[in-house]
Amino acid sequence: MSHDYAASADAMGRRARAAARALAAAETQVKNRALEAVAERLSVDRESIKEANAADLEAARQAGLSPAMVDRLMLDDTRIDAVARGVREIAGLADPVGETIEQWERPNGLKIERVRIPLGVVLLIYESRPNVTVDAAALCIKSGNACILRGGKEALRSNLALHRSIAAGAESVGLPTETVQMVDLTDHAFVNALLKQDRWIDVVIPRGGEQLIRTVVENATIPVIKHYKGVCHVYLDASADPAMATRVVLNAKCQRPGVCNATETLLVHQALAADYLPGLLGQLADQGVTIRGCPRTCDVFDRAQPASEDDWTAEYLDLILAVRVVDTTDEAIDHIARYGSSHTDAIVTSSREIAQTFVRRVDSSSVMVNASTRFSDGGEYGLGAEVGISTDKLHARGPMGIRDLTTYKYVVRGDGQVRT
Image (cartoon, rainbow, N blue to C red):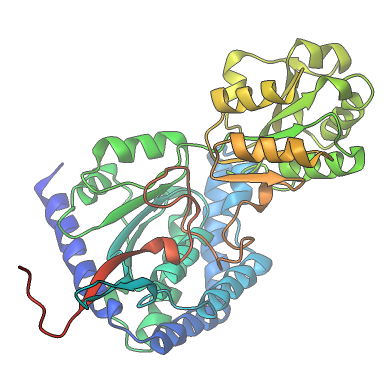
């Protein structure tokens, strides 16, 4: 690490801390006006955003990125409209800052409250998806946090264009210039310098591939909220409705295979293996999905490739699906416990009892019953958006919205009490 990088990271952290103090005191209506202004600027600036994104897309194709990864990079009119709409939805959410979580009175007359406050300064490190730039900035503004954003080099032009719109919107209502800072350096040494700024930065949230998260964890002196990868499962119970099962699996795998809540492993009860599974796998294969199956899967579907042990822990982020036939629900749950990543796992079943067993025993941040894993998302949960999906248990879990970007303090009110 060079001295210049350390000094630059320190200066960025100092600026963020100063902005955080001002933002924590900002009235709700000011933060909402800022978000409305950001949404408007995204729409006004869409042509320059798309121009920057087109350059990133061309570079990604030249670099040989997979179609799924290129799709994650794309910002067209539909997606720009969606991110602007998400910003407005966040503006419409209740402000968590200042909320009294609980309160009680002690026998000595002291009134004690737990009150929500912002975390302070949030560092976001992420890959590929430029919409994260807007989601993270909007969530941090609404929750009263300053943020430092560092996206992947493959989306640098897009992120800088989006940041210009965000900064213009926030500054137009008087929020500090450093409310949202974007790192424009691609050198990993500068990121490592930022990860040491525990004096100024309160938490780092890495969002991307497993290697990115592990690198952040290994280098940070700041608390990290993380998920290493999204090895999501769908389990088809013996009682699963065939039409529902097909609909859920096709959506969970094929709708957007390059995202962390796409299903990577399909578990199928042996009662469905002979008559139902071949047709389902045929439909998946017809949509371009490569099937990597256990021996029983390969026996009933001749287009399946034999799965290796590594396939059960793989986050493909592509049109590849690992498939295993299991004898019981217990075996499916044990498979998820052994190979899963505690992200999102689903069951399709007609049995309330089996569904409840699955919900109780599968220890993931989201557990779905008769629904696609693709719903594991802050927007879909009504959170407006998310800064990431945490598979940790401290201090947040699952899609992280504005409440997950707060902590609390105790406020104690008395009338002259002293301790004896």
